[in-house]
Image (cartoon, rainbow, N blue to C red):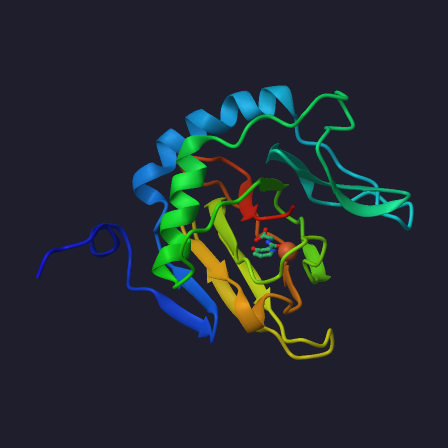
Amino acid sequence: MIQSDLDLFGSQPQSLASQVMLLPGFALPEVEVLLDALRPVLRAAPFRHMQTPGGLHMAVALSNCGSLGWVSDARGYRYSPLDPLSGKPWPALPEVLLTLAARAASQAGFEGFVPDACLVNHYLPGTRLSLHQDRNEQDFSQPIVSISLGLPAVFLLGGMQRSDRPQHVPLSHGDVMVWGGEDRLRFHGVLPIKPGKHERMGERRINLTLRKAG
Ligand code: MD6
Ligand code: FE
């Protein structure tokens, strides 16, 4: 048997629901290339705390790359081709993210995934993300590929109702999650990040979610 990258760097794919797949350590071989590619993205489009339609500020700081970026303000949530901070288009989606996302999606049975948006979420210790559904994208038949970096997190994978009791899924540096199909609209969130210092990333968690938004 030929040993794959997954065997070298993590454990086997885990099915969390019928169309939610966890690929432990899938991004590890690419982490340095990925971080190099993120640096200019974040220089052009720095992390910011967006306002919610309710007038609060989100605890998670975020940025985007790709032809579309997710934005939130007093008018609501949507995808926009322009970064409201700079008034310019979002930085392009780095090649390493496009290929990683397509490979991960393919592992989970979604062939030909071509994302046009990547949300970059930044968490400090104590930051949480409350239960939500991702429904601002045009085509729910396309999956979402999520890459976790830095401090570990507990991801809440809920059901189709906000009140459904969520599974607690531990996510570590380099883990990739792919979800789509009938599970695409599950409620989900992230518990407050525990204090700590990741040896490569320091006191933060960064999550990248790649989507076909337009
Ligand atoms: C996070 N992720 O892991 C937040 N959404 O920090 C998400 O909200 C998310 O991981 C849709 C699909 C996958 C995700
Ligand atoms: Fe989400």
